[in-house]
Length: 415
Image (cartoon, rainbow, N blue to C red; front, side, top):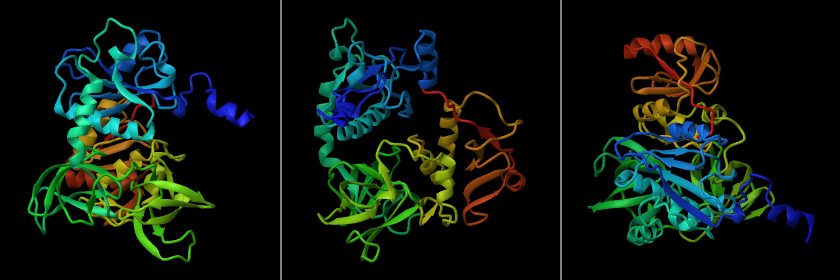
């Protein structure tokens, strides 16, 4: 056996090697069903036990919001004896889990089972010999039933962007956009339109159902587009014909790499090529921070409801920037504020100097601090993603909204 083979099969201490993951373990917090706690409270609880931090990799709150715990490359502390070969997710509650929670759990398990195809889904009670009944239902059986029921109603977006509106029909205002390769559930069909739920953020709306727009689930994506935009070309050469233009957040399946080019699957069975530097493996955060990701989109036009480099709004910019760091945030600014409050350090910085990466909220608007004196945001004043002095933005937007800005700093602790 070569030294490189040994390095791949013997994990570092505490490191969770992807090729060793055999179990995807579902837990519950065993707290009252009406107690709205989240990852932050579990982090504090587990620190109180003397642990290094929260033992779970993901936590799903009562409203379905998914919160990160330990990163997937770090062994959890959730089932004694199998932590070195498992990932874990904890549902908040004891007996009556919400529909939003179960849908969020399903989205996570679809992602995990695609990336760890050898792993099986099971509950804590079935992962080891224990007297515990956690998660208080048969997770393995539930997962098989859920998959069977959803398979006929799942699809992937087969176009660069898919318009999602509040009601079906032409000429409706844009609510959001689904990006190429993203998965969705079809909840209802009506006159050439489908009511969908986007797996990425749980957004529900209506989209057209043409044969070339949505396709039955293709194999799970392996990479996401990390650059602001990139072209899919017919051949691995810059002089080749362009086939598609994809933007940040689009999901692709890489089937091979030739030099500086990834070969990818396309919806109708064709193949195309994207520059390798434009994509990053699913589940791996960008090397840069969220602000740098947002800065890649500088100059993109402002579009209410837009979610791509061709046009986007303020909350889409923040969502895409955080997504680049492996952080799943809600779609709309109001929901992002509630989510950020739950994830914040608890330190009020409204009267202190903001720093790079802080979120700044006004009623109906959100941006990212690039530093203590600059902000980047998609806004209708500039009609673009723009960087401007924070003092200028505060004076204008405070006046327009009638409220002072609120700054929030996401916790840098693992939870």
